[in-house]
Image (cartoon, rainbow, N blue to C red):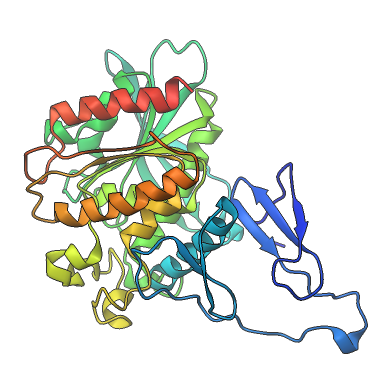
Length: 389
């Protein structure tokens, strides 16, 4: 049918909506799905007619342990099954602000093309392009460690807001504290480092594509999902051990992507978020450019009370997969107090889902940076999450 729903090994039947028939719960690689029984084979007189289910909104996004039923009644989140309902609402509400995630019809052949190959002492660096969707190619660096004996863990490495874009992360100039793709490839990870739309070599007119993407954030998410497709296609990659890392723009880009792509098993986010009420005192104008989410301005008046999601929910939707957070004490972009509040709430979701120890946070005494000692801690943590599983 062109959707993203697929059966795993253990589908369940249950009357989820209390209407007297059995519905299907489908666990699969794309998530947990509820297929409602519409009784299409029943007597026409008892078939339900078409209906529109309104978005399930939440007034306080920090209150993660409550979910609403289709009638809007609140219930406590007490089990992983309860959380699955709440998580589905998070994904839906993120798409209210970002626009819908493209369906599988956009998953055309990747047609990876190698443009340049460079040799470094520890890995091969290839400049490539791949097809994200019909008519659109993404430029990227692919870093493949030398002398691999077996398929290796892989990392999607997302760059910050900087003119060098992917080149900096891939070790071809810029600030040493941003060259995490280069450093991870030297540690034995296959790394893919794409340009964000409109950065580096990737010219992109967001407004010209507004009919397809309501936000630059969703376009980037889709490109990153396709980048994971590229990693999965490589014989050098252990497709069950794929992670994502990013600083600043790359930091929240990594989180957003991990919410929508369950293949990402571990995320390192540096200076990537704070609760919306703590972002410049609740002034969300910085999130409203074409590269981000214009609907935050045009629909929600840049008001954190009106935006349909917050970072409490973003991180919680990744649980119990592993997250490492670098949150400097003097980050002028992402206030550390808002980070602390998010982490306090999200830890409880990890506890519910059996993910204790998989959420790690460090608070270095510095500004908006990814210091050497913090990167080293992050890489050692990543080795435990992806190499020692």
